[in-house]
Image 1: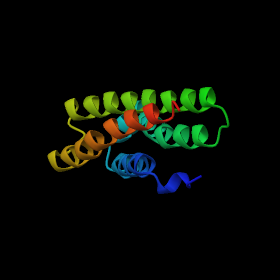
Image 2: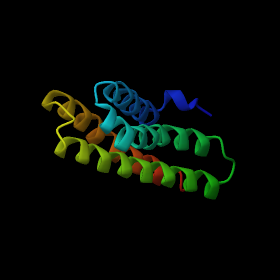
Image 3: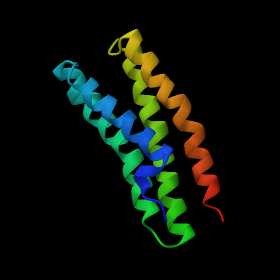
Image 4: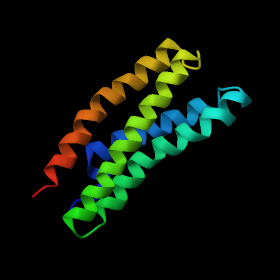
Amino acid sequence: MKEITSLDVYNLSERLSDDIWHLFDTWSKKAQNTMGYQIIRSADSIAANLAEGYGRYSYADRKRFYLYSRGSFEETKAWLRKAHRRNLLSDEKRISLQKIIKELGPKLNAFIKSTQS
């Protein structure tokens, strides 16, 4: 079995969470305390659930964690939409994050689908 770190879907999720981690440092205390910690947790949870599912033995266990990962992905996107509306993202950062999201979403869905066998 490949290492999880060799999978594009995992590496993209790590890239997204690392970018959000560094973005947090640019926000005011108000933004950090109200939504910052939550977006860090949801973004980190994408890769963490992929890794946990990858280490599970049964298909049902793997799929459950992969679906949790997709839920965290959707939550992260919701927080990023709020951050954009609240002027916490520069246009450059928003475009950079959108690029990762547009690549990660389909790969995450394809990865989940591929585990059905």
